[in-house]
Structures are given as C-alpha cells and as structure tokens.
Image (cartoon, rainbow, N blue to C red; front, top):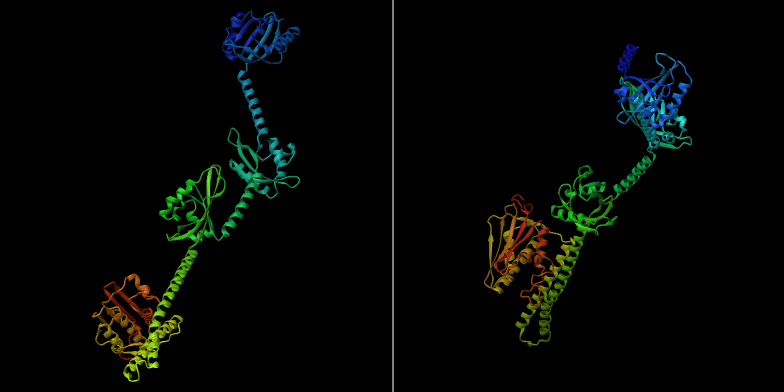
Length: 630
C-alpha cells in the first residue's frame, strides 16, 4: 500500500492535477498531486482540515450539497464536474473543475476521492470572451451605423438593428441574402461585381449604394467592409458598416445646386466679382474678372491678390483688410471708391471697388465687386475738356467782341468824321487837296474794315470746311517779294527794316498763291507790329531736311512766353487781352495763317521768348514741292 501511494503521488504530481481523499465529514485525509504549484499548499498542511473551508463563500452551499449527496447515495460512478473557486495560499481564488468518486466502502481507501483540475486560465478566457462579445454587441446595437458580418459568399450572419432600419427591412429579413432585396436594382450588379473582386483579392471594399424602401423611398448609403481571414490567411467572410448618407447627399446636392446658381449669376454679371480671404488669397474669380484683368482664373486662384494691385497701394490694401473688426456679419467695408488696379500685362487702369465681408467660424472672407471705369473716366475728361473749351471759347468770344468793337469803331469813326467834314465843307471850297486826303483816309479805313471782315469770313469758312484752295505753281521768290511790298509802308511808318534771305535755286511749290501771300503778309505784319523802331524783320525761304520748303519770318521784337503760344494760335484770342493793350489787332492773324498752312498740308511753327524776338516758320511738305519737269 505504501508503494502504491508513492507511485500515485508521482503520477499525479506530473499530471498537474490534485487528488484529495475526503472523510465522510468532508475533511482532507490525504492529498496527492501538484497542490503546491496549483494552490500554494503543502499536502500535509491541509490534512485534517475541512474542504469547505477552502471553497469560495458563494460556491460553498453548492459544494456542501454535492458532498452530502455523494455521501448519502454511494455509487461507483463519478459525479458531474463542478466549477467552483478555491482559495489559494496567497489569498487569491482559483477556478477549479472538481469530480468526486465515492470510495467510502473501499477498504483500501475508505473515503471520497476528489479530482481537482485548475481551470482558472480557461474560465478567465471565457469571461473575457463573453465580456468582449457583450461589449461588441452593445457597441453594435448602439452604433449610429449599420454593422454586419458575412460569410465568404456574402450571406449576412450578423446584423445590428440599425442596419435593418437603414435597409427598411425587418430584423430577421436582413440575414442571409435577404439584405440584397433592399439594394436598388440599378446598383445591385455593381455591388455584386465589387464584392466578388474584393473577396477574391482579400482587400477592403468601399462603395456607395442606394436602398429602396417598400414605399419607394431612396436611402443613399456608404458600404465599407474589411475581410476576415482564418489561421491560414484565407478569406472566410468580412465585417463592415453601412452608413446612411441620405442627408449628406441631399445637403451636398443642395450645396452644388446653390453653388451652380451662384456661379451662373456671378459668371453672367457684367462686373468683375472676386473673393479673397484675410490673407489676400484669391478664392473666386468670375469670367468678367478674367476679361477685365486679362488673367485666366487658373492663374490667379489660390494666389495673392497683390498681382492686381499697384505696389504703391499694396500696403494700404493690407491695412484696410486688417482694420476690419472681427465678430461682425456681412457688411460693406467702406463706400465704393475709385482706385487703380493692374491688368495682367501690368497696365494700370481705374476701377470702382465695392467690398463686403462675412465672417464664419472665426474666418473672414471679402467679396469685391469691381467695375472698370476707364471709359467713364475718359468721358469725364472729355466733358471737362469740352466744358473748359466752351468756357475758353466763350471768354475768347467775349474778348473778341470787345476787341472788335474797338477795331471797328476806330476806322468807322474816321470814315464818319472825314465824311462829315467833306459833306459840310467845313474847310471851305478852296481846300480841295485836304478833302482829297480825307477821301483817301475814308478809303483806307474802308479797306481796313474789309480786311477784318475778310479775315472773319475766311476763318469761319475754314472752321466749317468750306474754304477751297485754287492751286497753281507758286514762285517763292515772287511770293516773298510781293509780301514785302505789301507791308513796306507799314514798316516805314514804324521805322522797321525789312530784309530778304532766300536760298538759291528754290523750286516752285503747288498751292494757292493768294492764300500763301495772305499768310506771309500776316506774319510780316505781326513782325513789324511787334518790333521796336529800328528793329529788323527778315523774311526768307529755304529747303528743309525733309524734302519740303520752309518760309520763315524772323523779328527781334518783344517775343512771347512758350506757354502763351497756344493762346496766340487760338481764334479771337490775344496774349494781351486788356483794354489798355499796346498793340492793336483782332487776334485772327496767326490762327487764320495756321489754318491756311494746314489746308496746304503744312505746319506752322513758332519759336519765341520774351524780349528775344519771334521766328515763325511755314513748313510745306515734300509733296507740295514741284520738280522742273512739272
């Protein structure tokens, strides 16, 4: 018997189980096996102790019941295994599975043999598994998305309640292939093809679908799945989710529709419309902006707006953006203002800019409406110029009328006065010579009046485009000589010397000899009138470097300032407009001469300075010069 016990102890110790022999009252009589490694007790230390003292209080009643049952109903069959908890020597509890044999009547044993196996690891693993499954089930049922698990051929083996709600099917109808009945017929072939491909390749699936409910309602969903593999790496199904995207799709479609409407309005707007953020990055650029700035939208989007702003205005532009106070809704950031912008080629142009701002989620966006006002500015300039011209013309006409009243009254007074003397024979009948002189004065005054009237009529015809030239060959030497002869008396009266400076072998020109002589006489008359007594006036002609001919009159008189030259060339205008002016005249000589020269295709040039005299040049173009063959 002792040899048998040692053999049993070694065998049980190696097996990892514990075998205990209990007395009829449930006390340990003998302990075999791995009690130290399993429970931390030496076998001899528990002998004589009650087995129930080591059982967990929650399991103790069931253990006592089973022990009493085994003692009261002896049998050779082992009892059903019982799972309970036994106290470890360290104070902890170990899960064990215990079976009992009633050997109380066996003379060699005389006790109840209990086989105890430590199943703590198994029980704890099962508990973790149950907790994990409970957690998974809780998460699956509380998730806002549909969750499913399938086998390899796509039959659903698990689905949460949310999936049935999204698909519009009863909970049990979703399992198996039932869920496919809810898939929109147009999407089913695409789903089956994608499913087969993903299962065959063992890769995740992502596909958008539509479910069609019993009443025809359409639900847009996003289906995502990942493959499940076995220990050998073979795909045995998948787990996935189905997310209801209906509201998202509707919102996205509404946003796309709103964006399309906005883009249609913006792109058909006549004004340029662009959007920038607070850093000056361009977010939108409509067609009108492309045309106005000459820049494709693709070249400016997501870039700084500085390209459209002159460097001199860049700092002010940034200051205006940062000056806007955050926390406000849409508003106009200042009134519309006229500023300069840059086209794509760097050309500046005027614009009218209106800016509004909106703030969302702490981010500011600015929308600018830009109007090209180049044409408006041009019209404004033309209107201002026309107004100034009208005012200048009105002033000139007023001055002209004042001048004309003086210029007409002087000869008319002479005509009337001398005519009265002759008519009343105030000097008596013997003063025939005196009467003859008076008659000559009357004639000269009449000729002077006729000249004024002719000048007025001529410039009026030229302004109206009604003056025709009678063209013929003109000998420049003869022309200059005739002009000198016509002003010789005037020059003599003012003690002004006339001289001629002609280039040799001058060719004839084609023109109206009467009008050209009128021009030359006007220039000579002015030269004599504005020269000091004893001063020289030179008239001449020469070829110019352009192949044409220049006629010129040069004096050493009072001259005029360069800024007064345009005034002297304006009709009815004189540099000295005061009533106390020193020099008489209508102010038509130079303007009339200029227009007569321009009628010949030429140019009238004036070079003058105060106190330095004046040189007036009549420059006739090459086409006016005649060859010897002509």
